[in-house]
Length: 113
Image (cartoon, rainbow, N blue to C red; front, side, top):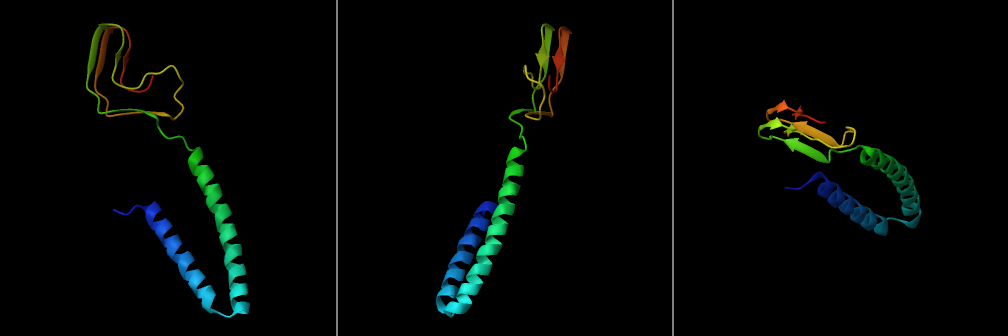
């Protein structure tokens, strides 16, 4: 299966090769004008892609994930089927489809704590 990244990279390589071959056979004056225009458009596109990539990279992806956990039962202490850390939940943690947590004398956590 070809991923989008591989398709974009392959398409870019083919486009650069085709443009290079075409510029090699056209008249110098025409090639000069076309190459200047293509360079200007590519520079503007590169700035846009750079900004997009920077914004995309700044999104936090979950790093701690609890998914499809079983159940937890305790008489004393904590029962945890989710995510429990000392940090505040800042988007880097995710709990989904967690099991039941039961505690008689303590905390029960099935999400993020």
